[in-house]
Image (cartoon, rainbow, N blue to C red):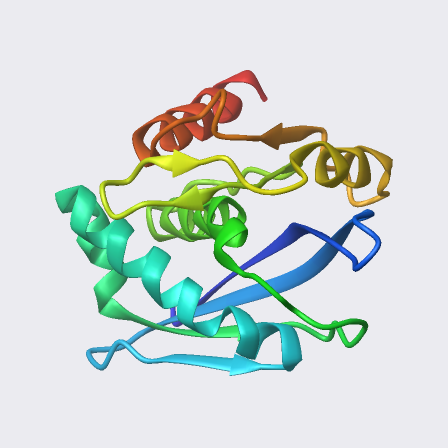
Length: 171
């Protein structure tokens, strides 16, 4: 298991407050160095928030410390627009990390799920801007995101992990 990959569709919005989804890939490589690299404009914009989400997640639960044993590459070919804020990507990035965690455990990844929310250092999620516009874009997209997660229904990383485990059992 040299490389693990996951794809996520991050909810976002444009300068007219219209929701949109942006495709992103995260690649994880077993490594003692714990390096994060970014390819593409959006990935570079998300770099610092991804490292933050990764560090918070690894500090919340002993089993999640395994994230520190990997190096990561974030890829996105998105070129349209300017990124003004990245904090709300925390929920989507957490979903991506949990799918990588599932792959580390030889479990199948959970598809059809995305979300928006701001991760706090205690593992709780706060409400993000324009949740409704982002949800509308996710439901209207052809990327199959039938589950849209917001902090109102998923307040903590523990709840997100539980939700994804429940979705796995419902398959």
